[in-house]
Image (cartoon, rainbow, N blue to C red; front, side, top):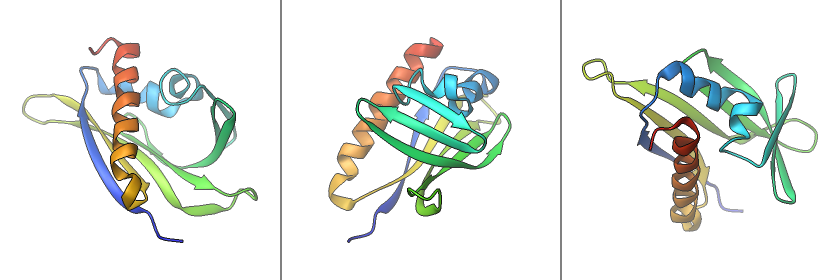
Length: 130
């Protein structure tokens, strides 16, 4: 099995960091743009899309700044892959952007990037940042 490669994409978002954080860190916020439904039990989040679901552990969070979810296997053991959402605020302009860190197979990189672009577009619509 070939390994996935790490990639980062930055999206400018017209929002306050506090509002944006609610949409990237809570099951109700994430279910409005990231997945069809998101459930959490303790530190474990289940992301549901159509007929598939993936489970991740909230590995770390810094209030108002970032969240990191580690994908877990069927035994709730961490895999080596994760996705991270970082809220960046430019010190001078106060512009807010969301930095996405994720992993994909090299041949699926373009498709994975497109998926994030679509999801972030949904997020912008939900928070009125269009």
